[in-house]
Image (cartoon, rainbow, N blue to C red):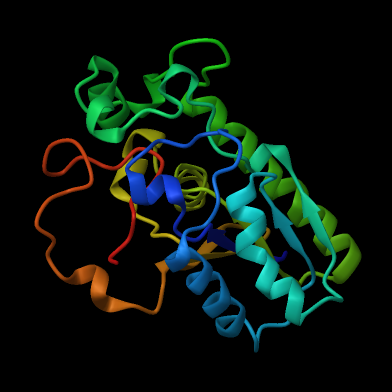
Length: 233
């Protein structure tokens, strides 16, 4: 079965501002994110790719564009199922404010029981289910069209990628906050008839993420950043 290269979008203006973007329109890459996207195309230069699948959101489409510019033969597809979690009333709010909400503790400690409030708010369980279904469907399609050893790129969002990786590892969803994927990082999973193999997790090729920071993005020490963090820079 194919290998999927899960790419989190490059750093966005919402990441820089500490805002939970969700499906907000017009959230673009910032200058650092554009540099990350350009570097990603170079990092993947030696990998034979069958296709690119992306979330429909602008920050993901901008992330894969440099790759498509240098490899215009690659077919590009969009799939709403790998779009960001629907955060409901949390969408567009500052993470520092959200860390004070009672639901924040549920998202941190019992994410399988978390449902985001307001119209269109999604449960984290539903988010994971649609994302994993999308990967499985694309695996079947890519294998049918390009063979069992094919490799393809799927560009998505932090919580989506963490939930897919957790499924591949056989981890309960309540443990997925233990995973971290920085902007424009690569998480690679090789799916086989018996089990998936996690080949890379949140790989940016940049060890500066290991340098201690003055303070976390939001919440208490040890809290995961909902939607994904800003990375090391």
